[in-house]
Image 1 (spheres, rainbow, N blue to C red):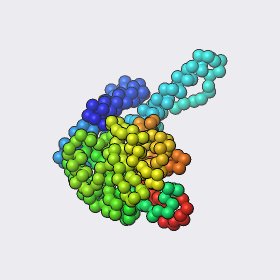
Image 2: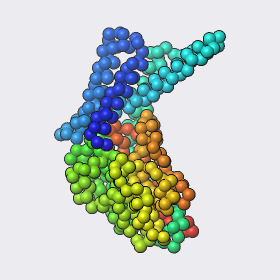
Image 3: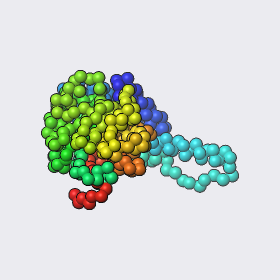
Image 4: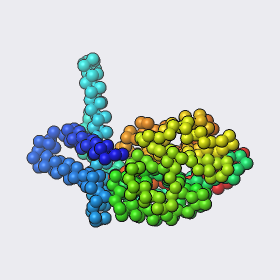
Length: 380
């Protein structure tokens, strides 16, 4: 995401704020005291957004960074949840009025709570959901997938760790890094893959350093490889140098042979100019097991048709409320494992959220994939 797109996203957040304010009960906006409270609430919330999204990485005090993230999380996640409810309510009212216009003799005998009660109940639910997501965002778990593949028949099994969406910065606090290192190395993988959005627009030098030390601790016989995501800046020398210094190897539109018959290919993010699926798969040979790593879960059917055996992605952060449409509209798979003929697709919910310290009902995870022949019975 470039700077212009980032500012547009910030403006979109402000527009949602105004939308919610419009649907608040008239009594709250006409009563002088209540109106001042509502306005102060919105002003503080928008300022916290500015602190988190626009100047977070330049704040020299970690405690102030976290305070801004907490305030913006408990301000803006409830706002987005309330916006969804208010929008649904507006649609229901429109449909009811349309019904009355066509059938005035058949009004619906449904007694609804007063505006103030509906708004209070909606806000209470939104804050409870936010609290659950805030607590949930502090956990990190290991998710395992068993992937049999005919292309692996007669070959040694391969254990792959997939890490994605670390988002070093406001969405991911450094308290997760020791747990990340522990989970990755305790899985004892053959290879470690990092599927993009390693950093983002909120990443400061201290965040970059702490995550860099964590990535350096990763150990695997075949090494650590990465692709960049839509929140990474491929033109940033600082970012690319920080990753390369960890020992991780770039897979941006290139491939590497793990063994004579296992080919690992990486793709640039589909928001960039990149090689086509046909071009990058042209490196595969007849007996290869072909693995593809790319940030966004797109073009899965095309990859399957071209002979890919396993594709791994992140980006979606799993299924999260209220971000139910922000990244899903173009995703072939939102979360988990799915078959495309002979190809298996695995999409991880990632290590953290973005911007806000929140994740629900999805949870943070490191993925361990056991890839083996379809004729092999392996108990892990």
